[in-house]
Length: 286
Image (cartoon, rainbow, N blue to C red; front, top):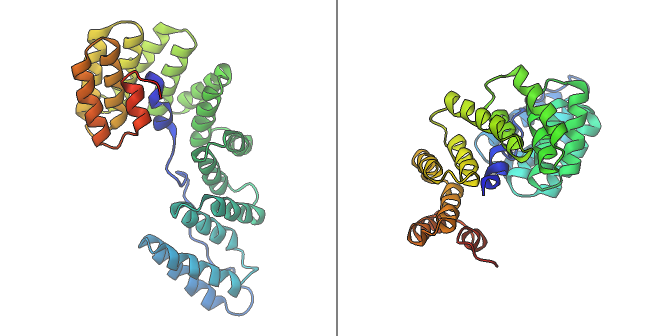
């Protein structure tokens, strides 16, 4: 069950960590003052989570000055709004418009790639991350996410290259350490896997993810006492994380402690686990 955490460790928020800055009017043509006013009002509405109003204001600005140099970023804002409202296909179309006006934009490529990952379209996401890294070979988010995708695709050698590159740039990068630990475990390097996960825990002793991942490795090695302690620590640090409850429930099921497994399953269900997740943790087929 250790890989139950892989996606949760790496999936970024709906909008990439790269931030799209507010566009400014380019100062050409008539109506520039109104354009600037609409843009500023739209940004304020976004910050206030008035997303429908922001969408309307940005679209009015685009009509007011269709050739303004800031319009690529306006389309980026519209894509972000659509994504936040659950309109993913519209968001992809808006990102396409934005990138048509600003091809190669780092922030826009990262944001679109993040959405592709969220939608499960790893091939498109990989293409965007490759484009970013062709120009910015040390870009941390792209390195991390490309490693994640390569790892999921079992391209372990290529994933290792990206993790190690990122860790040379940022030796204490937590997600890269956790990803490399899992990769080493999958690549049958058990000693390196444990050394890497222990390093992550030493650096981040109050973060639950390292303990949960180490517990999964210990479970695989039949180090049941250590695994139980690490699952307990992860749950103590993040009591609302249903993945940890599910993982421990599965651990208890496999070690024939059904009462304890039922307690964790009930708590995971209370925290929002699906019927399929609960069945998996209980060792049942659906």
